[in-house]
Image 1 (cartoon, rainbow, N blue to C red):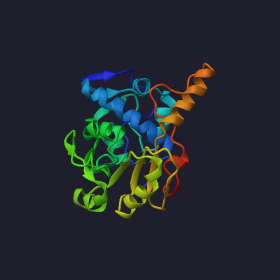
Image 2 (image 1 turned 90 degrees about the vertical axis):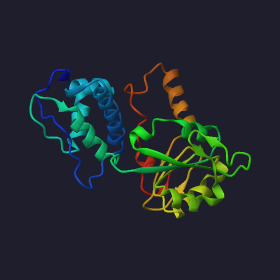
Image 3 (image 1 turned 90 degrees about the horizontal axis):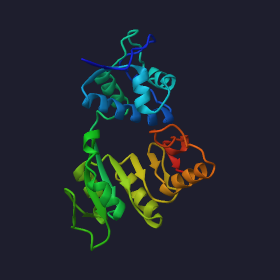
Amino acid sequence: MQVAGRARTGNEGPAAAPDGKRLPPAVVARLTVYLRALNTFIADGTERVSSDALADASGVSSATLRKDLSQLGSYGTRGVGYEVGNLEEHISAALGLTRHWRVAIVGAGNLGRALARYGGFGTRGFDVVALLDTDPQIIGNEVGWLRVSDAANLEAIFDRTRTNMAVLALPASVAQTVCDRVVAAGVRSILSFAPTILQVPEGVTLRKVDMATELQILAYHAQRGESGGESGLPAPAHDDDAHPGGESA
């Protein structure tokens, strides 16, 4: 049995996500990093890991790690570290990755095609089931294992493929109209790459990825000669990034 790091004497162990408990967005963002690190340990054959080793692999402090995992209900045995497989399962459950997510990408431009070709979604619980566009020159083309469908038939395609998550890779001019159709089709989880503010109703979770904004933040830190934060972490998740309705900043 391989063990990563020296086991701490604090309370550690596999996490159990309490039913219905909503975690702060910043904690959710860090859980995805812990999960990636745990999958690396699993691939290496490591069965137990200390909080110090897991924190180092995740680019956070061990205090932050333990505090985050305590929100999942982690009350383990002293001095033995975390069981890697069990902790991976509990974090996956807390993130909803034990469900079957069927993702449709709307917009088959350069970004949409790149996302459709990416093979890493399936291993993380996301099955890309449709790629849609309105351009007659693109409709019918094969991209990876998908054939581009006509976005005019969005509602029927979502129903046929049982889509429950959508990615919008669209220009700002059409993003709100398409977003409204996606919501009307019953999808309640949307990731938008459109460079605009979108409005969604209560009960819909919208995440916005703005590459220009992230580059501007990097430029700010670069011109000050500063580091932008802890290595290996995703951008901080602000409350308005994942609020359940209204305006996405």
